[in-house]
Length: 234
Image 1 (cartoon, one colour):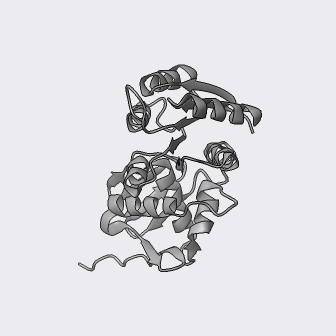
Image 2 (cartoon, rainbow, N blue to C red):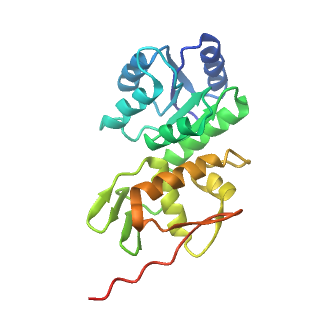
């Protein structure tokens, strides 16, 4: 797998290590030392993926992600946070803004490479989903090609991985999917990853979909989709 990766990291040692690691894997790598330069490089070089620290000078990682998601030309650009912040609140913030993944320092180099390849693979043209397919569940409808989600007549804005997770669950309604299965199917991990990523995305989906959320927790196992509600009788 090849592609252009933008690394936004102010620590020179970590930045150099990530550049060397990804270059050895065949990626073209460009780097920025602060958030403002990161946004500028994202617009100028159009990378296939961004790996970004949170604690950055001039503009923090959250600001970088906001700027990318608000630019129509960059809005779907895959984004991975690489940060020393491991608190759940930081993870929730990053995911709610539309990050595709989150890796804490110190990190295993092989895991970083696996996550970069996974996010690129899931975002690439080889996505196996039928792009014309639409799923409906009660008042909830989700269109794969347009990547649109509606509750009744109201469109719900979802981050890329929130959309993918909702699709995976709806496409397997009637089955219980474990957190590890969801990590593999949505994020592409073939090893036991951080299942908190799944939980964070489920919480965001429930918040955004409200009463229309069909996701049910199966304690100690994973998640499933509840039966569709019958329309209210007049």
